[in-house]
Image 1 (cartoon, helix red, strand yellow):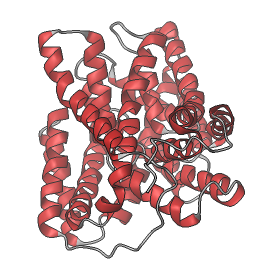
Image 2: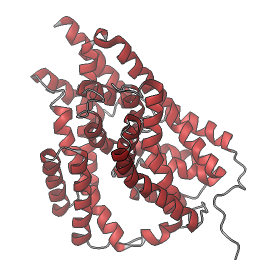
Image 3: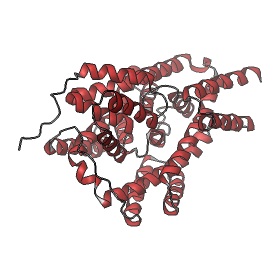
Length: 405
């Protein structure tokens, strides 16, 4: 039997061609992670036939099983299948950098303009963040909290997060939800699937997982010995990228707990940037670039953006490469799927708590604010307007109200 290679290098697509394809997607893929997966399917299954329908579905299942931004991880896997590790990096860069650059430019403009930046625009962006998070909570709850035990896990997770509003509390909630899921939920039927068209040796997978956990555990210990603002930022964003289950919106509470109480970023700037992040294409986790550029301490600006962006996506690379060799065994594990069911319910509660504090408490002060948030929610959920249109409309409405009232 021939030995497995670490990556498929005999594909006709070069890393450069992969970069160009994903760059176009990074410039045009609006609508959030579910929409991104639809764009990928149309491009790579229906049009280019890089992999079969069932193989694509299995790759999506793997990336939804892992913590981190699922659409970005699917892109990494697709790039890996066509041009090896350089293809994975090219796919990530093409899909991620367009929105990251826009958010960094906004952060730098916000920083340089200071108080002269229209306050009404910022308030409008904070209000639209309420609508966006509410939509995410509703959609995730419908899909992930399908029975009374899952609903109760979500409610208790929300209460625990509000009572213990720190990063350690949120990690504790995720762990507790996994244990409860392991104890409560029965196994579900797993349909057979084709092997993924990506070949990585188990040795490489183990090395990648060791590196993933080594950084996750070692960085906090290193900071105790060698205090550094840069290391603290890397630790916070790496941890956020390592522990986000359930979609990009769930990164919000982890990043808010890491950056706002510490004084790295003020809460108004945080919510304004999060609101704007809904208006750009590509993955929501590029919000990390905005936060890095907005830091009150060095590194900030372009360097801070690069540090935070790489730190939040590094776990995705390590996990995809690390888990792929073991995916067939994991996807049939009853215990793994039961724990994941509990985690998914727990992150709904985590996001529900964040919807209240800080998103709602920092944006909704008057009946008019509530009305605007409700209008934005209707525009997103029922009128099906593009998120960037809703963000633009909210910002302009906030500016108009502050100017004429």
